[in-house]
Image 1 (cartoon, rainbow, N blue to C red):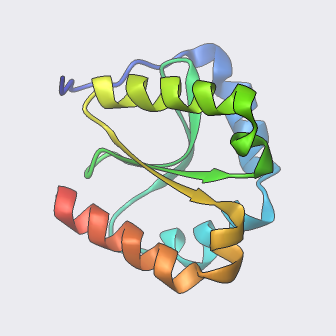
Image 2: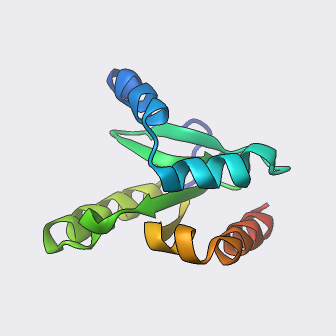
Length: 121
């Protein structure tokens, strides 16, 4: 399903702002060393439905999520799978990277993001 306007729980606005102001080192690295100067616009901490995603490109309908260690715990894997299924139901595509990939393979992560963005335009 491709929709023109994404649903947005406006009650999450303060939380999204707080997450932006208190970004993880990995989020800041990806934002300041890649997305901020990237030729295609991405936004940080975008509200989609009842969720807040790390990075979102409206033009490519692409979400980029950075996962800390808590995302690999059994109780959170199901939550992430439900989030991804919801986003896919809206016609969005989700790329997930572990924080250690940002720290250890930054160039490769940026290449994957760029390739997927270009493919989806």
